[in-house]
Image 1 (cartoon, helix red, strand yellow):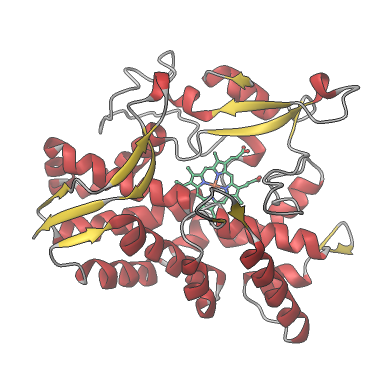
Image 2: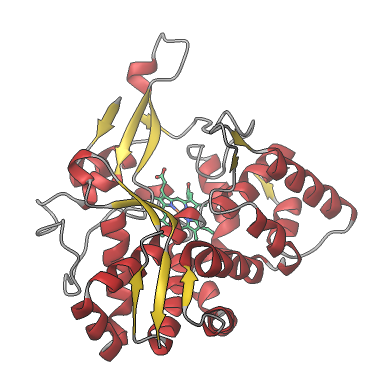
Amino acid sequence: MNIIKGSEQVRKAARDYQNYSSDLQGDQDVRDYKQLPLEVDPPDHTALRDLLNPWFSKDSVAKFEPEFRSIAKGLINSFEHEVEVTHELALQMIVQCLGVVFGRPQDVEEWFSWGPDTWITDEDGIRHGDHLDRYLKKTFDELDENPTDDLFGVLNKAEIAGRALTRKEKYGMANLVLAGGRDTVVKLMSGSLWHLANNKEHLNKLKTQPELLPEFINEMVRFLSPLPMMHRVDVAATENKDEPVYAWLSFISANQDSSVIENPEEIRLDRGANPHLGFGYGRHSCIGMHLAQLETKIVLEEWLARFTNWEVLSDSELFFDFEEYKFIPSRFHNLHLKLNT
Ligand code: HEM
């Protein structure tokens, strides 16, 4: 596997779409369309991303702060002595906030039922995507009949380069905005509460200085690297081959690169400049970063206001990365906390 590592090398490759192209289709076991604008190069990338920009800019997301806060309060105030964070808090918060931002509260229950990964994995470890295919078909069929001005309604009417989007392009855009901010944000929220359960000094500091939360969240995005690697087609290596040869951009290695981050294995509240690549780099960098940061900040503010401290219960199931990154949690299957008010 060709893995590109280190802050400078990853930035260089992320800028160079002629040699490291995003023109590919991943997850072929569960979908037969591209996730957009992720899996395409300019000029289509630019046009498709421009359609989403108005929904995800810092200012447009900030307008929803009161609704996000009321969702967070409702969830957090319902917990008494214990909570399973990944589903009862993180995923609930995420799908309800998406319902607000996308203007589709009627779909929230269905989005929640898919779980943190969007794809459903059965007991044999086989992933399924048919529930999502059914949802996308039903949604865009309905929008053809009854046009709306919510995010999917706008995508249904959108044009690029003077033509309407194809059905598969619409599916690819809707799929990615539903999938991109689920397991990543679950990991960020769960990882932040896991760290504060284990580090009372940071907990006390954030309680007395909640204005440090954005910096803490940024540091947790770096440390956790919720999306550790993404692939590109290695154009030179693919020449004369039947199948694409991939190169992997290792964002996690860039976030652990000691030439740009001092003692990267430590979680610090006072890093100041934090040149991490947790949200990627360049034209494909995360369009949902403002949404992820705001959702997480509000959850942590409301959580810190309600609970004095909390402990991780032993039936929690969390998995760690491998080898050089084995101190970094890679997945919170569930995070069961005992709460003290
Ligand atoms: C902590 C939370 C998140 C992390 C760590 C994260 C990470 C990333 C990274 C590393 C990329 C770049 C992928 C690449 O270069 O191949 C990316 C792209 C993307 N993310 Fe996120 N993401 C998060 C939350 C979200 C949210 C909340 C949404 C939307 C609801 C979202 C939607 C997207 C989209 C649409 C792209 C593709 C952008 C493009 O190709 O132009 N992400 N994300």
